[in-house]
Length: 268
Image 1 (spheres, rainbow, N blue to C red):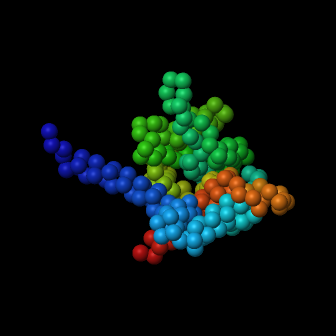
Image 2: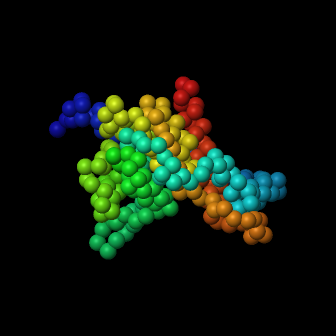
Image 3: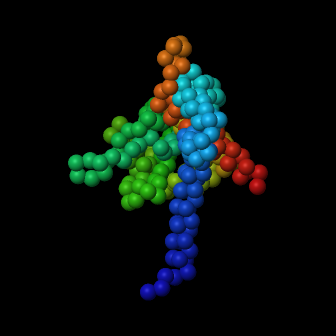
């Protein structure tokens, strides 16, 4: 049986969206420190180039020592500060971006578990308890490779119910695969009169997210959480390679590439 034109358009749109998400994930990888290191190593092996091998070693060291990766990540976080709920001006809604949960194998089925960005959820509850907005908005984060799993926003809403947040004080947006789609889904969900929001997301991600929501017509009060670099004195250990430092460098570079992409997109 042939699909109707509208059905064909829907499925083609879904496939195009999936293709774009994969593309958005793969393109930053090509310019990430890890990819550049691997490219230099491959080139040095192919051409027996000592210069390429030396560059690979130097880049690996620079990207994986906390004394260099930590300042880079702080710069991406733009020296933001962790706020207290009492210091935030009242708004019409608290919008919480997805990206804080992992789906892992359970005894009977796949189950959600907190990831590193769990502060987003608990910060939203703090803001609601402080009376900063009458409504919590969770975004329906769901990536193509997660299959038929439950969107993250629905999981978060159910958890918030257990913490005593009334069901009628929470809404969940439609499925979204990246920050741009989250913004569009929230704009469709909320009434046109809802403009003042408190936006909750990770500190390194706030700059890009805030710009997108402002472009959608929201008046945004940023509430950054999930800071990744602790405040401490520099020690000799900070000059030694560390896997987490390399991960932070890679994450910082990807975020900067994302900001560059959206900046160019806004121009054209």
